[in-house]
Picture 1 (cartoon, rainbow, N blue to C red):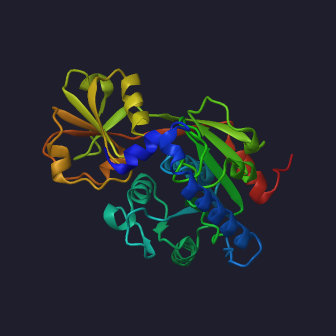
Picture 2 (tube, rainbow, N blue to C red):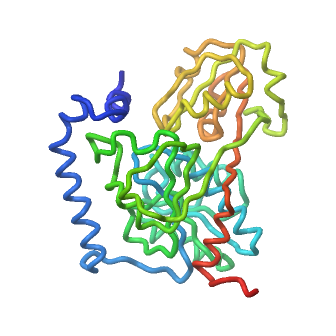
Picture 3 (cartoon, helix red, strand yellow):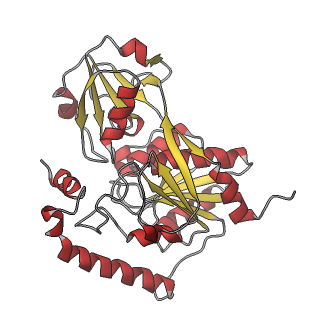
Length: 336
């Protein structure tokens, strides 16, 4: 088993494996606290943009549903008459600031930013320096009136006007900081955000999370799209008689597999590391008449196999309407 898999198993409980990593976790905690203090006191500079900034992030390592929430948020902001743009680090990319186009290479811009750009007609820019990425976006698209940062809760260099933290079904696991646990910051950090979105999360959070407004999120999707021709679609019933294999290289692959099971499909699951860069050999070793995969995986798998590949896009549903709170915080209460 790879190191990432061993760590994630250790993070599930406060057992011996995780406890062995407490010394570096304590050091990590001190460094994280120091860094945040330096930004809070202005010793490390925070840059404020000319437009409002919304950050969608989390405090755990790995995905928690931030990108589906970003897509939902952007769509709702557009319904409110706004013209948002998206910035992201671009995981796995070269790191330099660049615009994401529909034909961009996921290896250069990151899988999630490319997925956002292909799903929605909005400007998307990536770069390790999200301040520079946002400034480039604003310069290229002067009609943009709001920036949404997909991830970046810990990117304090970029000043933000509204913070959203996402917690998924795995919760905070053992509640320890990296590398003894999954946390990038203590759980008390969640008390400071403007909104807490619980993605299919049913358990109880620690008391120090505080009373930030909470919203429920779930992911819906039951129509598959052919990877080779996205205009061609089918339902789960049309796939039921095939020998299927499902792959997922996302933060929580089991979430995707559970979704497929809920659609009534039988399949052989194969999990890959988050943001995995697929190659021909990865798919060749998987048996099956057809492959099922997430939209995030699909942007990296075109042309890697001759077998049918069916992609399942999902859409977030958020209740109550989070955008009401966002609009009130950014622009004031709506006149009665």
